[in-house]
Image (tube, rainbow, N blue to C red; front, side, top):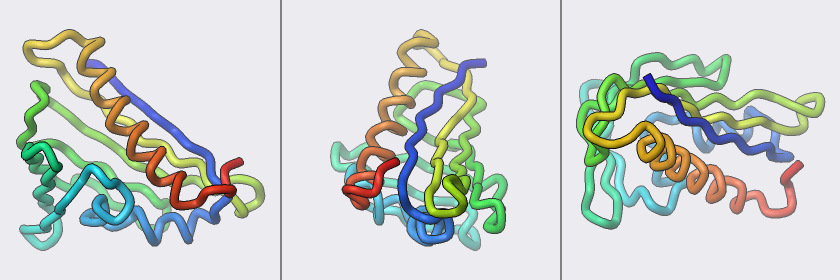
Length: 141
């Protein structure tokens, strides 16, 4: 099993940050490369579309609003992987004035190298967190 992870620290209270990124369908609200997110099955399945025409289908596995965390699996993806489970977590820092955001996953590459799969996901996570940070310019820790 392989893993990938990206993090960012922001001078934004975790409750405020969670309001933006905590919804399972909210990726288009903070990641420019996600053009559409449609929820189905009572909000447990999301269909994501990106500008290059690729689509992802993901299932919400765990959601803990109080802990500012959710986990999801990939059901369909243009990236050749299996057994994918990812978690996004927002943790308070700096006495509640800041936040640490971690986006991580475990997965099994299928037909690609572990390095290629890890770099692909770390690139996606890093780009998303960079876009998130840009919304709060001047508020990074």
